[in-house]
Length: 446
Image (cartoon, rainbow, N blue to C red; front, side, top):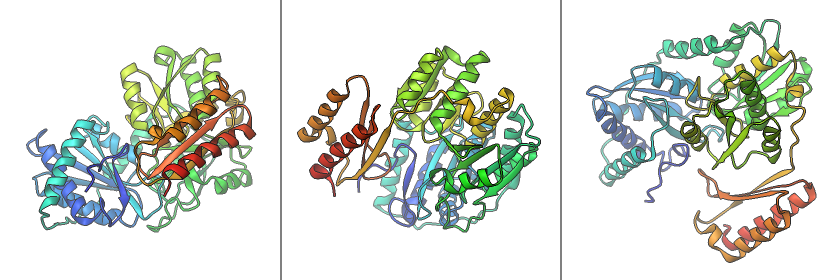
């Protein structure tokens, strides 16, 4: 049994299969309960979930494991990941558990853990919990799930917080929202209606199996059609746990996380709230964003892919804003994690105050052609130690010089090598990304 339970975004896998089989999930609850007991005599733990059909039984097993160690469990029911993070840090909770696999299909699920600070657990604490899970799995104990009752006031607290963060009303503004049949399916329409918006909501009918299914932040076609058909000023799509958001302008154009960072970064700088004139992003952010920030007198610092690494660097630098091209955006003044609904509030506020639309806010952002190719691999190690792979990457980098970028990395959650190539010429970018992927496939593909 490989000791690699916690990835960059908690534990994730196919629901019902290791590491999300019943025994391991229960052992996770027991291990987390033991860890929590180090922080408080009678620790309270919060649990929330997205809309996957497996969320209920996973929550009951986690709760049973926690209760076996004397922890008091409170259940928020369907709520977003940032909602769990907010409630954990603002309430009496030693830890919060979010049951979600984010943008993955319904058959997958996952366990994310937040400490009382609202931050994901540090690596050393995750390691202690992981080691205890493996110890418990050596002689499995009978799993004892615990029935749970949803505490609706917990969700109200989070919604009230978000409503209070907004400094502008949206009266008369038409907003199209794609909730991806996920955690935001009730919360997002209610939030924006409460601020006066005329809301057109789609994909808000979860059935346990349709989360992210041809909808949400990874599938924007339906939202684009809705924005144009209903003449909405703004469109926003959330992923399954609503920690990310991708936008659609009134013209039907996609506005991704890079464009959001540019608009928000410039607005914060103009307001004197961009600490150190610095924005943190990842190696995946487009060269065009970096150059637009340069022109605005803003420094962009890159991290490895993963909002966890973005947040760590933000804390280290004292940065106010950071995020990913994929739509995770973190406003440190208000949140300890990416929050899709908060990002929408902030972006719509900036546009309203500027008296403009999303197209105009980022009209000067030049996007360099970028191609990402995924290669399924046998194992995730030794990628750059393979001479043929290293040589092909060097060849492409030399051909680009300073005009382009090459990034080859493993996925944090899947057996994939990801090849990203970016440069000024689309044909060249496609050729180079294909050539590198072909070598990886030949050397270590399934």
